[in-house]
Image (tube, rainbow, N blue to C red; front, top):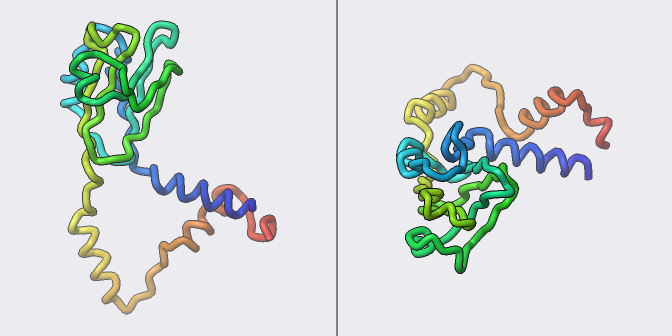
Amino acid sequence: MALSVLFFLLLATAATVNATDHIVGANKGWNPGINYTLWANNQTFYVGDYISFRYQKSQYNVFLVNKTGYDNCTIEGAFGNWTGGKDFIMLNKTQRYYFICGTGGCFNGMKVSVVVHPLPSPPKSAISAEHSSKKSTAPVAACGFGSLLAISFAFFGLTFSVWI
């Protein structure tokens, strides 16, 4: 069981290594009177990234809504609701997301729409290097799961004898 937990942690870490946390409003947070359209237009969102909202939880919240809810500042039929004051939401699909404040802040600009793009392909130079290394007769260190597992055990100071 302990090995399966470690495996899960490794997969979770590997899956989010390149994820970006986009803090809505940057240092201004989720508050009225901020141009979130301008903020969103200066960001590039990819599948697996996070969008996070920082606000006073006693005053504001976050709702994931459809375009109609976004345009009309209504929460009817919302897909999600966050009230923690420091909310991290994974953007797990290629699509447009619409977020609003459901306590009336939407009417004062507390709404943001973001477009999430698919993950970019690896650069051609990385692919070329991979193909050329396969042609080489020199020994090359494997970077598969076994190596990742060994590195993880070394990092955490663990040995296989602990788990077996």
